Length: 110
Image 1 (cartoon, rainbow, N blue to C red):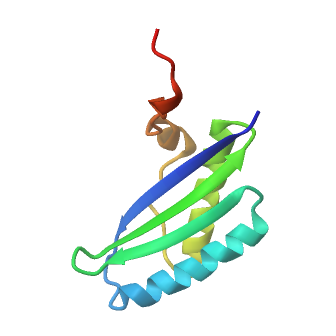
Image 2 (image 1 turned 180 degrees about the vertical axis):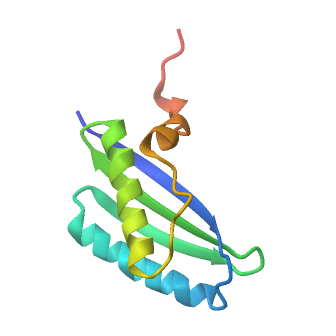
């Protein structure tokens, strides 16, 4: 049985004068990742110019949670790098896994 993860990243735009232009480039790069990475789908980019924030969302399907998280993080990071955005503080896989919240909507209470 596989798992699908809906992931959401929030980035503060540092020095980008054209935030919306960067978001367009990132969206195109994410669509490229969707074509190359099996299970990476439904990516979206949004921007809040007032707060200087870019948000990325995507669904990642894989055989298990750990692999889905790894694939999603790699795809998003690759997309950012392809448009010239560096990620020097990117979390390790272990750090990312420690931040994952379990969806309790399907848990049966006993």
